[in-house]
Amino acid sequence: MLAAVKPARFIRGYASEAQASDRIRLNFVVPHQASAGQRAATATRPYLSFAHSLLKSLPQAIYKNASVQQVNIDATSGSMGVLANHVPSIEQLKPGIVEVLENANTVKKYFVSGGFATINPDSSLNINAVEAFPLEEFSAEAVKAGLAEAQKAAASNASEEEKAAAKVEVEVYEALQAALSK
Image (cartoon, rainbow, N blue to C red; front, side, top):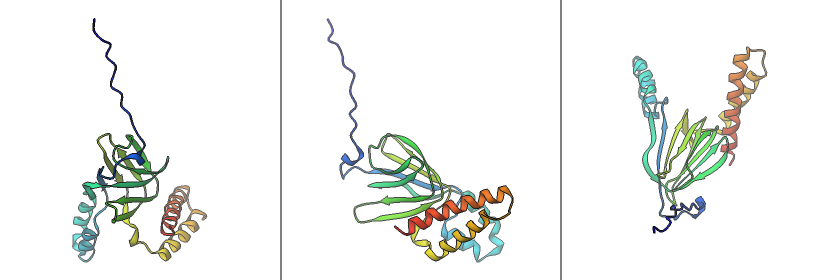
C-alpha cells in the first residue's frame, strides 16, 4: 500500500521578514521620454528636431536589471514597499514618488506621473512609467506656479476637454507639491 502523498506547502511570510541579503531585480523604464542628455543635444541644434522625435520614441531605462534592496511605490491601491519575494501583483501607479533603495546608504527618488508596476514571483519588479524625473530636478516655486495656472485653467470657461486636461495637471501638480514637502 502506498503512503498518502501530501502536497508541498508554500509558506509565505510578510515582506518585512525578507532577509537583508535578499535583493530584487529592478527594470524601470520610461518608453516615451528622452533622457536629459538626448533632450540637451537636440535642444541646442534645431535641425535635429527629427532626431529628437525619434529619440522620444526610444525607451529610456532608468534601471535595467539592477539589483536593489527595496522599491517604494505609490499605487492606486495604496503605498507599498516592494522587497524580494513580494506577492506577485500588477499595480497602477498614481502620480507620486518611486523611491529606490539601492542599498542601506543610497536612496533615489523619482516623481512619476503614472504608469504600472509588475511585481513578479521571481523577485523582479518592472516599472513602466509615463514620465519620471529625479525629484531634485523640481523647484517648489515652479510647482506652485504651475499648480496655480492649472487650477485657473480647470475653473475657466474652456471646453470640457481642456478642463479635463487641466484637472489631470492639477492632480499631478498636487502630488508633486506633496512629494516635495516630505
